[in-house]
Length: 399
Image (cartoon, rainbow, N blue to C red):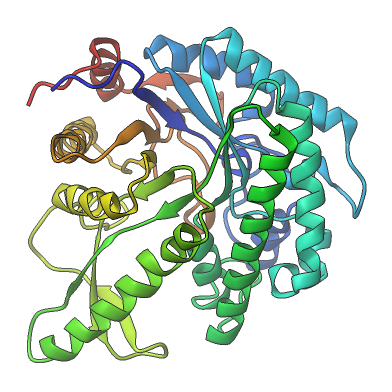
């Protein structure tokens, strides 16, 4: 299977997870307050970005998805750090020097502490603060960036922070989660229009990175009710936000983050739970149910929007290289099958370029094409990364 000549082979990174020393972020204080493993310096990508981009290019990648850390740009309300704006400008210049197309995310789960202290995304008045940051950042980088992801996984943010309570601010309230998601979608729509206005006639593509997964009913006596719960979870988690944005014509492409399958049963605080794992089938290091067929199914269903799809994240955390290899090849096969069915897939970004800090899971999960020794900060290419490099160079997959 040969891919289109303009197909984007890439990998993804997130600022908080790899840069290190993001001292003004709500996550920095959350880790300390909850006694979690501390992000600390992480990969110190902040000081090693040029080296990391050189490594990305050594794998024949054409693009890299990065994110901007809002709490660096705006350490205080209505205060913009020219030093940090210049830093990210230098980051973009480095990407271009290494012939890597920048795909830039503006919000990847973290907020400035001052924003969270003002009720964060619960308060609709705070949307203006985010848009000020968006405008300043986009205006600074618009001459070198033509692809923007405004939000990464907004529903995951609302779910983890306001339903499970495992991420900041640690709430457990469905009404609050609903309000947060509504405010984020409002910020997205307004941000989309802002970016279009800033670029004028200059071409630019804008979207969000949406986490989608396949939901299946837990088998057994409760199967009929569990099937109803699956429909509820699938509608709310997967499609509601995309339908909302597509109807308002606020998507230039669809950013897809896909990892695994999840089993759902009726019950619990919100009508459906997902704490069941079947014994059969392979699980990764995090216990996620690996299901490449689901990747194909999701891609085919996304075809209904008649928009290009960019795989903004796909990857796995493993303990053995052969499992990375299996995951990569099986999911690329599903991608190729989706293309053969007519789905317009514009690019594929492995999560992630480097091992990094995986939020409440700390540093144990290893997703990187490059293994990171967190004591020495040495980067070492994993064997499966060379398989990926050969596919990127050949721009084809042997089925």
